Amino acid sequence: EPLFDLDVAFDTDRTAWYDPHFFHRQNYITYGVAVDEEFRARKQGRTIENLYVTGSVLGGFDPIREGCGAGVAMLTALHVADKMK
Image (cartoon, rainbow, N blue to C red; front, side, top):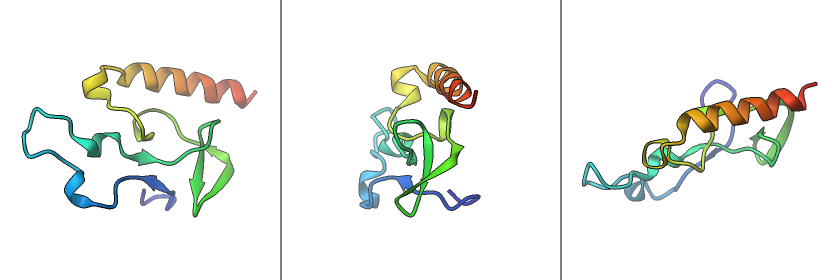
């Protein structure tokens, strides 16, 4: 993550990033910014208290195969907005 240099959850074995068969599961799609249980960003293993991450930059889900991209974007944004009250 180049802008804030946040931690990114990914497989260090680059050969595991993708499947050569185009229509098979592609692991790189599930990689994203590492967060705590409240969607606060992590940097160098430490939580940044006032920086939240939502939507497609989150890791841990496959919006294409699961068909959940819009749902993850909306629900994580709502959750974070509720925390900022």
